[in-house]
Length: 380
Ligand SMILES: Cc1cc2nc3c(=O)[nH]c(=O)nc-3n(C[C@H](O)[C@H](O)[C@H](O)COP(=O)(O)OP(=O)(O)OC[C@H]3O[C@@H](n4cnc5c(N)ncnc54)[C@H](O)[C@@H]3O)c2cc1C
Image (cartoon, rainbow, N blue to C red; front, top):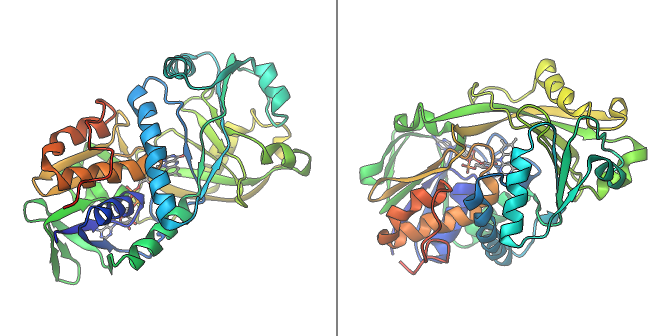
């Protein structure tokens, strides 16, 4: 039986472990922190999944494969930590992202409809339509309950006999599929997957300059009582009318309403403390204030920092570093939804090396998947 070594127990490492285990590999996962890791990019209450992807049409296509891959994971772990909410996207002067998403929905035959800002505000009483030029809504898409998914995968994989080693790796040798650990020992496998999240550029000098860690702030809110029912039925909100855009995740399955932005700070170190400063918090609140009715009546529950691993074009870096090693990085704040399907792809390419040349272009959203890449990997 072939042995795969995986660095990182975030959604990428765990999903790849899941797919490799199903393909008959023996798997060892090395993780420096507890699992779920609250410092990892994957662990928070929620992550959004949606087909609205602007001009990045192949990522919109990949969402269909992603849903299929999540179904496999959910069937295996015996729970379905997902809540469908639908999507509401808003544009101001620059309508290009919404127009591109609309066109893609049309071409793909997906359900979605246009709204005037005033119509959107009637449907969603928490919304202030000022300054908007258009809105687009779709019933598909929703919230992946990220912490629960990571915890369920960890439990399932442990029960399947996957070995979890709590250790920090200080060096990776792609040619030998080898990890040197900080206690002076080393581990070696037939294959090595490096899924180190925002720590990846530090571990892999080859990535530096190409992928940077980026401190991002999220704020949790309690809406005023008068709007709580409306928020309980709200879609995810993507407001592209502000520079860089802000998003809101509605309160689902007992979680709080969360807001954040998609403007990359491209600064910070994932080992830094995660408390947000008052300035950082207020910068996020300022994006939402003009858009959410009675914003002064919202209670701030907490604000914190997490880290993206940003690639300039927001294209994933899932590439072979040798014939036995794959790096998974550059997820640029939109990778979680694809975790399960990217894990399938990496497992398939390690199991059938003829697929390896097709992995990077597909993961970067530049090429369609070749047969075999997004299906369950053949047995090793
Ligand atoms: C605030 C926020 C909001 C987001 N929203 C969305 C969203 O709505 N939709 C979406 O699809 N995506 C979203 N993303 C992006 C998505 O969550 C990430 O792309 C994804 O979780 C990355 O997973 P990962 O496994 O690569 O990284 P991580 O979860 O960070 O896992 C990497 C793991 O590697 C471990 N590690 C690193 N270095 C070492 C070492 N040397 N030794 C041992 N262990 C090590 C770390 O401890 C960590 O646990 C968001 C991200 C953030 C931060």
